[in-house]
Image (cartoon, rainbow, N blue to C red; front, side):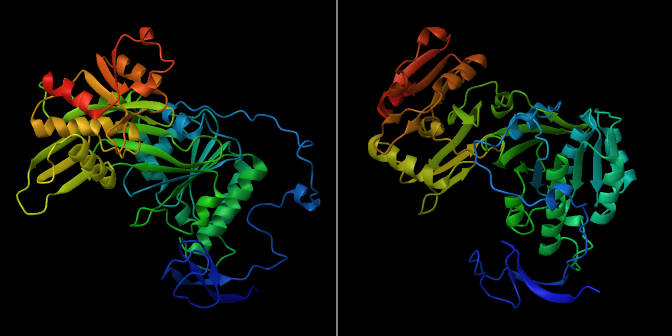
Length: 458
């Protein structure tokens, strides 16, 4: 009979303590310890997944030159957005964790991918019944005969079915609903999440089967469970977006097999999620007349160039202290650009309310849109519209200088492809740049004053 005991776990990092502590000695966070009832594992007791015969042989160190390596072929899905954020496809034996708010569409995304794959997929759901999953599948345009549904929460029963079924890809919805027989605590607790993830990771690495896990997030926006959960998996994807808007963003926050700067965009429809192959078209609002305070900036998300619309509104402050508000853009960087405009550009913004918005719900960190932000603010302040065929791609320094940005050719090509007629860049980006290869007019400037003179005179 296994011995039952009580212990305390840190909800942030998973640190274990025999007594409650106000501050975690591992991660330093306060009031994160919770009490859980666990069962001490018997040394002779087997885990939920069978023990590999290779583990019985004592591992010996090898020189790195003696280790043989061959490039593993990835599974290319029909979903090009997923292929991009994963780094080119699904890697054999990888563990992918997908997190997001409730109702954002995580289960819809994974069911749609499972239906589209030609391989045998086992979709394990601990939250919905088989009939509920069938109802959602009927609404989708994607149909597949290789997707099998299992409604189960016990890892012991799941692995029994896995041994008989032998799937090519495993989907878990969600990791917080699974429960291991080796732990007595409730499903979703720190110890249960960690134990179930460890069993799934052992299965993935030994069998070479890719495992997709859906994870819940807390009210702070972080993945629920111990922080060690994100360290254990190979890839962490964040499914973001406003539930009241149609567009969703799949963002990579960790990837051992590719870049962590990639971005996938979907549109939620009644028949499922539609891939948005050209996100620049949806990020630029369609309007019939030109309005002041609206400019287009060329940014990069990973390897993908995007053209986004920056909207600003500058109006006299009604109250004593002017308001500074930004959506999708760093508020501190906005304050810095406002100071540059007032000091170097001579624009009196100290008594003006400034509101800035990135259209489409994106959160932008690329400094290449600094010039577009400054142009948008000046356009709203002077109430002069900027032609909708003009875009900007440059960083702004504290001295009012227009600084160079990386991969300027990709930004110019994207603007040309979308029908823009002119683009403003830094003159320090022109070295080695062949203007003849572009059918768009490129303005190379060094100071903000040069741009404002052209904007206000047009």
